[in-house]
Amino acid sequence: MVHLDLYVVPLTLASAIPTIPRKTHLFPRQNATVDGTEVARAGGVLKADATAEAQQRDDTATRAFSAVSLKAADGSCLFIDPTAGDFRQNLIPVQTKACDGSSNEKFDIITAGKHISQDGGMLIVSTETQGCLNFDPRRAAGDQVILFSCGGRAGGEGIEADSQIFSFTAGQVSLPLALKKDNGPCLVVSGGKLGSASCSGDAGQNFSVE
Image (cartoon, rainbow, N blue to C red; front, side, top):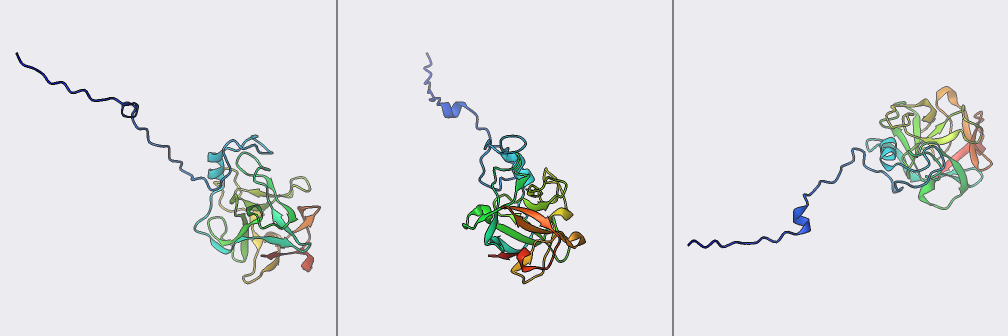
């Protein structure tokens, strides 16, 4: 008679379940805002993948300044609340408040890159969300200056938008926020928000880079 030696291999839960690769997102997330966070505008809650696609950091860009505060003549700083927009972090109102050095008041000044090809121009980009400062006179007063996907398309596929390009002179650290197209208007502080007025050349319309 032939005896068979049988070896029993222990079966663990880990070995029984095949390994499934993690999903790799085509558009890496650019900020720390959590998926499902409540937001004030369309969609009700943040969609992290849609936000990452819409608000992409331009690593090819030329930055005249990085992570700076923009201080108005009255001493207040521009700031944004990342939860005040829609599910892609578009339509975020740009407001002013007492400067505190937080990431919500930090901006990059971009003078060349994927979304700007005009000499003497700049994009003002939130360091926190990567959205561009955008002026839209069609919106209600007090809600005309917002953050929007750079390039001007909600999903992030835009190339360049005149509503986001402001005049810039190299070396300036105090400057008006004047739309480059048609030489204006200039953005001005009004009741804690940004509005617009004809550019006057008055230092009261300037913002200092700090």
